[in-house]
Length: 320
Image (cartoon, rainbow, N blue to C red; front, side, top):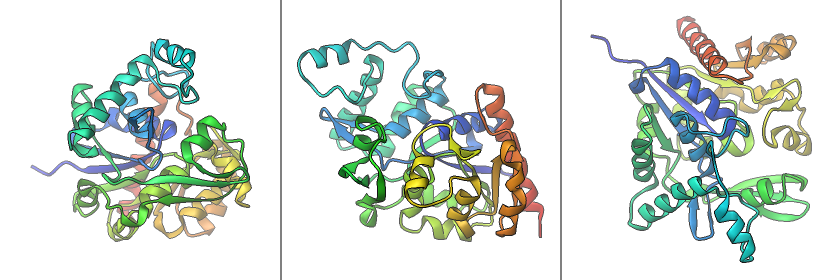
């Protein structure tokens, strides 16, 4: 009997979580591993918060708030209302259900468990089928250099609502951080059939993962095709500050620019049908490209995109 194929997905928050959910729906549980960005993790109110991990986890568990894309469905906010009444920091919303996740994570980390172990325990309790991993067990923090000073990512993203103008960004702690060991082992697995970079912010969601020691090198050495799905459609990002950051960093706001940013790391690039006119331009840059519907507003559309990306990977594997 042949071994199951292995698919590795790299994900940030909302957009990445949607495609990860689609992949989980069309693949067997042992075929999919999702590695989530943890560079936007932070300590808030004494609790360890992992926004991207939780967004992916809630989506995979079918518990996510489908309207806003993050958080839990049926959430209540009595804790936040009481905190505000007492004069506490209320700029980062923690719902009553969501709060339980952060309290449990913090308690387990304080017992000495790694973020990998904690994530596995939480995923088990929520009956997640595929493997979900943090990119690293070490502390890495995204810092935004803006016209309002050097800000942590969550302060820029949530407290300041992405309004400051970004001139640069960096990942504090990245030089000493080691990629999660199962992540590296999978990159070296001969049964790895595809590495999929989900439609996440290329700067602050994907780049932290790629910046970990050895990750990019292993991705380039792997015979598995590396395929990215563009988070930019018709010059706009569906969620988050990617398009705004591209403009402020003097880059064109286009799918072509995202492909160029990833460069020779990619074996394939998926864009939305709305950007189909860019296919020749992207291919001229040496990157095979495919256009399909990439906006995921339903489970069917998530599964459809997952199948398109997996089919593209098979096509690339068959090419000489």
